[in-house]
Image (cartoon, rainbow, N blue to C red; front, side, top):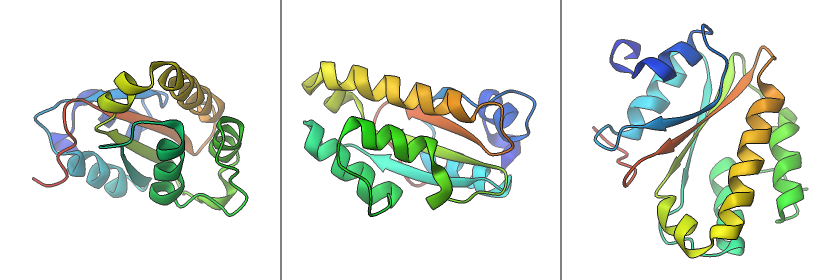
Length: 147
């Protein structure tokens, strides 16, 4: 599987490049990214945002898709806390979050989307120099789940 993965993700998964926020080609199924992560010993999750148009919907999608802990307070600070205290999400090698269909939310709530981008970037930076990094893929286009 990893032979067909775009070079930026492959480099993150094999440890030759620090984890970061990556793009994903619109024509590629996001299942490929999640499978590559699993094959590399990473934990993966998909955050589907189709139809989310406000902060409450976004945060609920995060809680559901990421299986956030019971102490998640459904606000930006709590999301940041959950993403920098990943004791609730153990991983051997790293964690990959694939965000799909995010463009509608970004257009509907641009100020909130700026906060989301900052929270994700800060979380990636927090885990960058650890043995269990956090990488985020922002899938272009509609997130195709299958092959």
